[in-house]
Length: 350
Image (cartoon, rainbow, N blue to C red; front, side):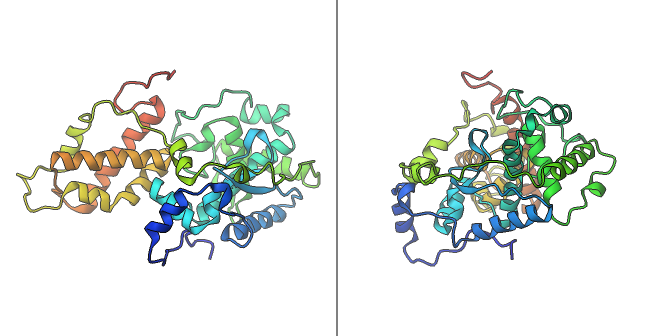
């Protein structure tokens, strides 16, 4: 079943030793490849969906350090850790979440949209610019989204279509490609429907045109060029959230939890947060579109601070979990909009 999680449980008795060894190993030396993995089956499904739409172009897929089509090339890069269950487990340690098969298909459809856009240079067409906006618009990692807008489709989390015209096109393509989705009904009376109908027309127009796209050579493959260790990969990609005053959320934590005087026998707040860490990180990341590793850092900070304050669980677990997730979502949304958590922008931000 495609809904099953890509990560599998490790039965090795010495997982910590194996984990340490992998972290110390250069990614290029692990021998990663797509062949023979669940990822290969998912790519096969993507190609089947493309074929079902009458399209003949098959964007090549290779292992990279992240999802994407680098430098505007019609090649789909997928994270290297999805090709190895052990590395997926390490990814989960760092981000508290890893893509399951359903989520991976969403990303594959999205990146396929980029690949088609780049392969046929559709962004140069006047009708493309009229429909999605100028491709030359500055690309910003942090963007302000309107969650109530009906002008954009919704596919991957975080209202991603609103980020940039190129992302709007890729998300529209992904929705159009999704099998079994009656997009005309789902987006009826939405402004986004015009974009989907445009997609349907343009894809039929280019369906049998095969663009010249070179297959990535072994020397060009990012995974072969990753001469750094797995640990160095995570250190390089770690984004340090700017919390200058550790007391900044003490009042909020004291509202969500209680002091030992009010509930001396209750569970420690820090233990509660740790126990629900994966769910908290996943939910906040989903609703905000923020990178899971950034959310994980924030949750780790709250855990440590709650422990320092000696806070306890004072109410029902379910209600507390909802309140904590809502609070975290509000903070992360502010971070996305301002690049600041405590109200002060980081140095160098504009």
